[in-house]
Image: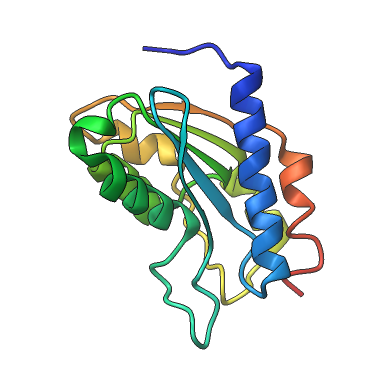
Length: 162
């Protein structure tokens, strides 16, 4: 089922971009994600915690946000939930969104645009695997909307990957 993009969706997406900017201010990678329940309530908000040497490479913002939302809502409560994220989810994060029951993903920065910003930086070895392709292999449909607001989302990355 396709949902029309609303002003609330854009506000939530901008909120995920602010989380990414806050992550940079706290010395971590510039990624941010929030999960919004079917009722429109922000259930979780997470930045990235994968920056070496202390960070854990599995602690991407999207993975943390969907796991936190699942702990709050449970499997039934995840129905109709949306992951808003400052960048397109990688294969790992797409898998986490799938397994946690996310029904919709709205993202800002595409994987292609992110690669242009990060280049071959060793802390962000991007996959050339769009989240739509990961979700297409699953047994249930996940709606994907994006990229949107790429220029806004790119600002947190400018100068970071030098």
